[in-house]
Length: 180
Image (tube, rainbow, N blue to C red; front, top):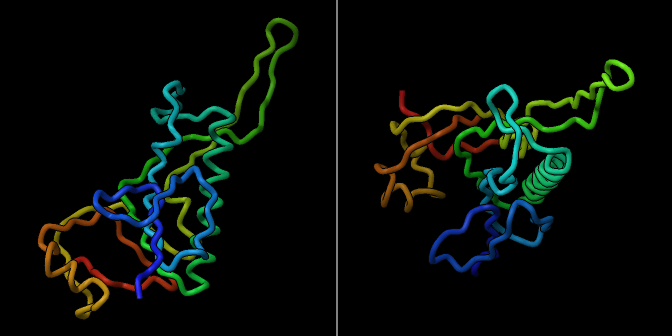
């Protein structure tokens, strides 16, 4: 029986499964398998400020990014609870600053200054609680206990694969482990 697959934030050439953007609000419960790329570059605007050397979103951009990431975080958690399969393609950590909505004021009259408060944010916020992710990279890894879920992939391209994060936590099923 063919599986109903959705790709979020990643378009795979030649694959005919449904694609949607991270900017959508689709429900994952309609699908058997979800492949999610949590890259937040599609939220980047051509005009932006820097804060402490990182991209700083406008008030509108901050709200939109936080709203969509929270939507996908809930959808991923609900899909996992419902027994669906979710693949998170965790590439490099993308750190940005987002507006908190708070402002402070100093001075009076013509000398009054407004300070917009920002907070750090990153693309890994899409990951549901209880899962730990550490940025790391390497190529020395192996299939975990001859896992049949990725056996075909591993036979074909395992030696050309690399990892960019280490994942651990409650409910995380190990398919590939780094070699020590």
